[in-house]
Length: 165
Image (cartoon, rainbow, N blue to C red):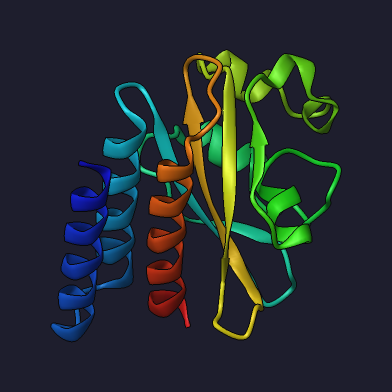
């Protein structure tokens, strides 16, 4: 099922690119697929690096404005959260439980206040390996993504890279 959801989302996103749809709509198609794969109560988020190298919201439909404002402008840092860490290292970062991960010491109050327990983030990279942003998923229970989920979000992130380039 995950493979079908991913394949359909990638095909739809590429069709939308071909038709000249706005970037936010295409990214919305990709985050919708990630949330379907992750299951009920999850939230997907795409952050992009701006010209100054800071993470900015590109599309995060399930996360409230106050949360997005609080994390706006984070600098990539391997010791901070999942998205900032993934952007800094260029590798996926998994945090099954915010309370037990030191990378979340400064920020854990933010997702916990929304009922999220953990998250993971996949870097969005060009084919040359340059990090453009991150594709994060938040969960309301402790969760480690399966290999199938990681592969699916990798494909969604690769498609997001094509949209963002």
